[in-house]
Image (cartoon, rainbow, N blue to C red; front, side, top):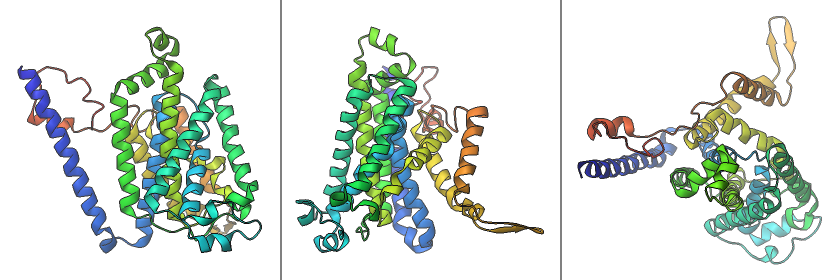
Length: 363
């Protein structure tokens, strides 16, 4: 009886601490425009969008343990969906100069939230359809199939001119996104993924990651759970793509090349495969380093030597970082662990030797 009472108090305190943290963080966001310059606010927005996408990607690659290389496809679908649904009709008519935009996209304009939800739904549907044939494969074969799907989406975006405007892309996308939108979705994704991981579905995902044969032997429907994880990931990747389109204001097929997948792969490996907290931390580090490393692509003088600017050197640095991680720090920053309030809770409501099952995975 005493144990149950203590566990209830710990749970209520954990919820209270989460609420206090969120309140303080969003208070910070409300004042950010007053003391942060637009450049750093841009970094915060991009970090939050990458956080949402990285956590969705980590659900499949980390928690489920399936090596998937096609998140750029779902991000592209979400981005084009939001762009086409939120752009004013007049701007669409001016943008599509080679071929006119097809009906009914040429005559509708939706508010941002419904467009964003539709972007997620389209990403989820595409993920489900991809998963039906793809999850008959495993390992490298699954990676190759999903990589091919991502490249197919880039080619389609370049050639379906009456839908995507081809290589010209879409410009003047309404910029609805601000810190509330980006971080609101980032926190929603984080808490949803943490809840999912501690649910029966999350336990099944982890069982599949460890041993598919053993998981199937205890009654886990392997195909069902794989499709579920990929569909959920597709939804949040689509939402992330929609947020990115509204944030950037312009998109084109080249934006969603394999390099986008490579960026997300670096983030989830750096943060730790299976750790959503790690993905959030690594996303901020990645975006910050991307900005700091712009100097390596600019011409520089080192003594009497002149080094010309080499475009793409940032990716070389990140590639070396990924190699270093694979060789010497394979578990990443967090491994499979999550940050929690247990350090505080254990001092207020100690369990007196009774282990609190699940405390390592609850926020």
